[in-house]
Amino acid sequence: MAKRPLVFILAASLVLGGCVVMPESRETAQAKQEVLVFPLPPDEPRFFYESTLHSSADVKPDTETDAFRRAVTGEQRRGEGLVKPYGVAVHRGRVFVGDTVAHVIMAFDIPGQRFFKIGEEDPGAVSLPLGMDVDRQGNLYVVDGTTKRVTVYNRDGKFLRSIADPKWFNKPAGLAVDADGQRVYVVDIGGVQSQEHRVRVFDAQSGEHLFDFGKRGNQPGEFNLPRDITVAPDGSLYVVDGGNFRVQKFRDDGTLISVFGSVGRQGGQFSRPKEAAVDQAGNVYVADAAFGNFQIFNPNGELLLAVGSRSSSDGPAKYMLPSGIAVDEDGRVYMVDQYFRKVDIFRPASLASDAGFLGKKAPAK
Image (cartoon, rainbow, N blue to C red; front, top):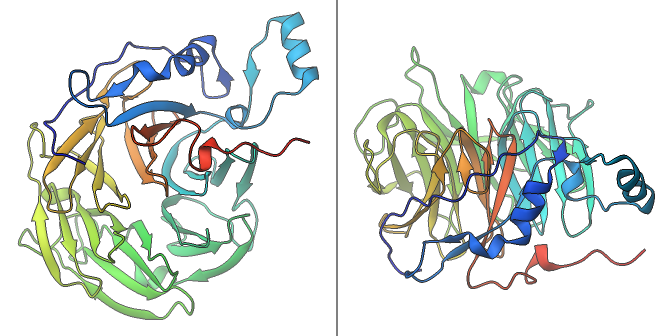
């Protein structure tokens, strides 16, 4: 990805009609999705807005009976919608979204055209699902801010095991797992009154506590209200150091490599960084709740592009309270907004619209 200046894209505002209804305006937007390109011409396109997830209606196929009823009554499509989404993780077209008010993880299987929920009942019930990630096999790891434990499920939502317990954390928020499912990294915000602002590392299989890194402070390698962590393909770690308005890069043993970002309103700076993700090329994506966008940096911390803008009206690439972000195996980006109760999906320009896991269709029934 070539280096690009910061571009805050302003798309036409599209008002959506609620989290459980698919309005005509959104269907129209998706039909014209190629118009929403980032950055704007004459710069070379890097990403296209592709679609949005608000509810189960966005993935479940419409039946002939439902279609006929709407044609007769004039009603719109409805589904089980997101209430207050926070984190997101993706595996082979299956999008897992933690809902902190519904107390559940919602699974949108886009290629399979199905929707289901995870963590509704014990064992494995969740209360406040925050950070989440998947390993190479699609196992889902979720950190719960209320129960203060990490819960592991297979990609179909079957509970596998729990890792750690409340004694290990003050305010756990962010989580990452390595591709092989060997180590789990949990970010503890600590809180204003605590000095334990750090990353705690556990064996993902046995749950054994391995080591910690970081402490409260503003020096390199220290944290102030850290928010999230993500693992790069080379095994290096990126920690969103929220209170210090920066991202810090570490080796997998907690040794500091580099730091980028500062407080401010310019490109490459941060105002309220929340979560981060890394693509297969090692580029880092950081969601910022105050900017209402995500910024993309190369592995050296140099700004490449920014996508999205802050808005009081919902629409593609419009955000009021963005939180979670993920990048899938094909380079598609998934951005969560808590206020608009959605997940926006962006496709890299190098990927055809019918390619990758989202381009695969469910087998005919």
